[in-house]
Length: 89
Image (tube, rainbow, N blue to C red):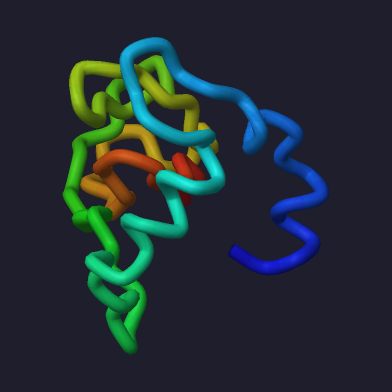
């Protein structure tokens, strides 16, 4: 953990009931067993296509999103997935 993170994490000196050591001590012990972060970021976003209805909305993952009215009746691409931005054309 970097110095700035440690300063922003006042919980580090806390002892969790039933555990040996503080949160910072347990983390330091665990840190050697952690895998490195992947070189390329992982995305869980999928591009999906939805048909725009007459109300200028499109359904993505059971949710309705507004789109410009000129898109009514068209199939439009859009992101779906956890953390996806829902900016549909």
